[in-house]
Image (tube, rainbow, N blue to C red; front, side, top):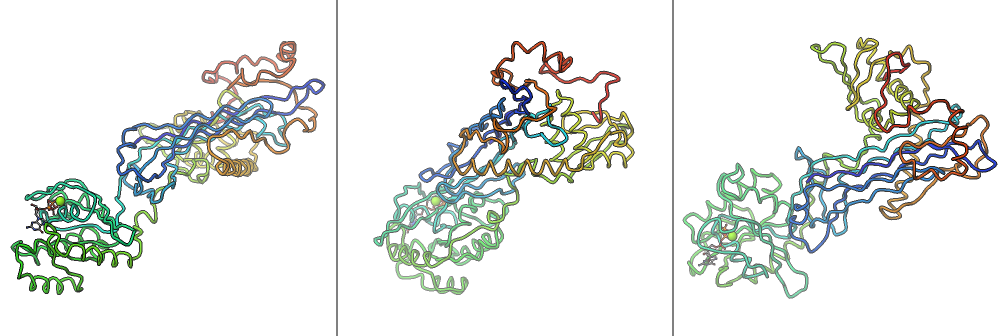
Length: 528
Ligand SMILES: Nc1nc2c(ncn2[C@@H]2O[C@H](COP(=O)(O)OP(=O)(O)OP(=O)(O)O)[C@@H](O)[C@H]2O)c(=O)[nH]1
Ligand SMILES: [Mg+2]
């Protein structure tokens, strides 16, 4: 299933303009976060069929930020319901986790972060920032869902031993049974209703043969279903040529598939005793010896002989065993709920291919995400990006590795001309700290939002921003929002002041298109 977090809304650049207060501060709100894709565990579903119908699942887009310090609302989260026992893996098969209880959720793809509006970029040095970020892209990935049936008892044994017959006799399930091997081709789940109330859940899987753990027969693909069971019920066909040998073979297969599975406690039943009414004691004895325990019972599944007795004992024994937590799912290898911007900013790699001199590729989650969120139409944003390159050390490393002015630098899908750090007019050290602070604040806001319910517009404003803010001297007035002009264009008196404003700001027509920002030859562009 391809899951795709919704894109975050763009941040907005606007400045407060009110009657009698022409010199307002920056008031561009931040874009809302894109919607997540979430898996939710629900009881009453037994297959992944519902989830499998959906190949592409995409979260909603976050709303763009607006003027008047209005933040955009969050994009809609999309929830996909899955059955209890769903294991989630990434494309490479690494486990991300398992959903085991009703209502449990797992975020499998994060929506993109909302771009910050210009009010977020206000610093003492720059009280009228003319930049905003684009919304981040949601993460897109393929995930694989796999169902591990959750039962108390896993039924194992050779093909044709009578496993499904037993399940049919004692539970509400009605699996196919027949006198040939591999009658069962997919796992069956049945509940045994015992008089004392709580049922016992049996999982019947296709029969195993020698070499099953290496892929022979068809049982091995189903062994994962019984890994979680507390107890195994090992069904041996007592009428077979070599019941004890079969018993040992199956145990060897279990062991070589998974060590823990080999060690799992078993109850053994020697089936088809109607075919050897007076015999079988020596088989029982030998199996007890081979197994090293005495939980071995003679039954006839077909004639329900000793079957009730077996179920009671099984239940008692299973109840006494602890729940099984699989190692694999207890310590997931991958996490899907981690944001690129929370990645370590120092973690990047610069590489070059000798056959393409003068070209450099910079890879790193953090720097790539910053590049994607940079609004290249705003010169201040471009400048800021070059400062991020300095602050993260990328520019330094490029310099050390011998990158020359004018070399091509590639980050994600963006290309830049390299302008060595020395020529950069200033390197604000506090830049990353400031970023970290803003991110921490956003994280708090997000947590609050999650706690209050998903997908709602919270309209949370920045502290200290808003109408009661002091007027700032030197800040100039303009309203301009590339991302979402209509939304925020309701500030008063704008029309009349239009010409005046343009005169004040100079020629800003270069910013007006929504297309790419293209630097001309001779432009003063750092790094870009
Ligand atoms: N006589 C006798 N036959 C039995 C007994 N239990 C099962 N059988 C027969 O054995 C055959 C195989 O039974 P199944 O329940 O399909 O065996 P299975 O272990 O589920 O086999 P696979 O699904 O192929 O692994 C059927 O023909 C059953 O009727 C029993 O107690 N006595
Ligand atoms: Mg069967």
